[in-house]
Amino acid sequence: MTGAPERILMINKFHYARGGAELYMLRLAALLEQHGSHVDYFAMHHPRNLPSETDRHFVSEVDFEDPPKGFRRLGMAGRTVYSLEARRKMRDLLAERPADLAHLHNIYHQLSPSILSSLRKRNVPVVMTVHDFKLVCPVYTLQSHGEICERCVGNGFSPAVKHRCNRGSLVGSLLVAGETWTHKKFGLYRNGIDIFITPSVFARDRLVKGGYPAERIRVIPNCVTAAVYEPQYEPGEKILYLGRLSREKGLDVLVRASALSGVPAQIAGEGPQRAELERLIAETGAPVELLGFRQGNELAETVRAARAVVMPSRCHDNAPLAVIEAMAWGKPVAGSRVGGIPEIVRDGVDGLLVPYDDPVALGEAMTRLSGDDDLVANMGRSARARVEERFDAPAHYAAVVEAYGLARELRRAA
Image (cartoon, rainbow, N blue to C red; front, side):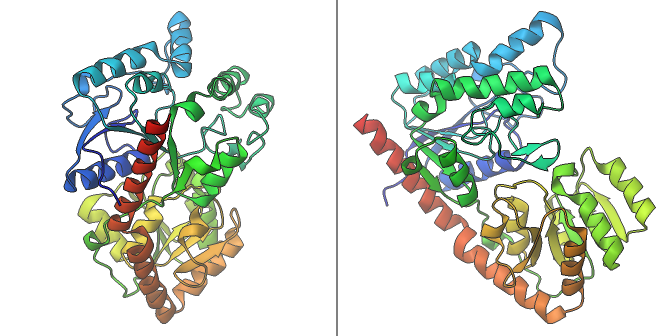
């Protein structure tokens, strides 16, 4: 294995720990710097951004949750397709601080693929980690109105318009479908990126079905630094969910499963579904406790005190970092058989897999875990061993550096 490039440019629309993609990017950057690389950043301005030596080159902030009115909204829509500002600022950044390789993460909307032309002009090799399904699904999630959907994958993007997949809005759905269609029609991602990385085989297969070249896609699972996580194999009392409180995570299924089984559960996190969950807990009498947002040592102790962790997703979760972290803490995981979760959790070995949207099946899994201390402890040890074998940082670093090497070879041959 050759070493990592000396100067790496990390590119993501947000430069703070907003979600799993940002957390992964920051951890990867730290890992690369530990091995001697220098990492610069390119992102969008935001009040919560971390300090960066290159932030004067960041693009202006735009809020898609609260868009402007009138002509400014039209300009914002144009920016999602192709941002002249992002292209110019990327050009200026590269002139000031040349990069040996660029590693893209989430650039949709706020940055756009316009930055790829600036990277090409400098002949910079480009790698992209595909954290979601935006390249093959206009609304990112392979969902339509809360239900799993793959109608657009490999079939064009008109189904997203027909079914009004973007929040039920015809105009909104037309805009996101048009954006995705334009990017694919002109090959902006296919031609602008040398190597794609997906955290799961599931995601790779959807990219291939959507027309992206299999020979330029590498599957590299998400990772943790296992040594940082002190496992606790002694079973606690309660089943724990940790993450965002939103419908696609299936937390209403968890509440109903707890009510049916009588197995107590805790939910750590915040999100738009909190009020709905409070009402459902009151209606069903489920023994479920909402803990609110937790992080750092408080989160670690919450997980270590749990009996098992549950991930009842009703969407195709690509490769949830929360599952890998739970396993690193020595906890078995009861998860939905969707997306990349079955690639992490081995059913009956380090956790249990159940059909999504099925509170009866999830309740049965929770009952099984709640009634067998030896099973929970043994699965927890298997989960920890799996993390050390497959999801630990050293192996991840080696795989990423190999992908970097392939990207550089392709650039030299172009």
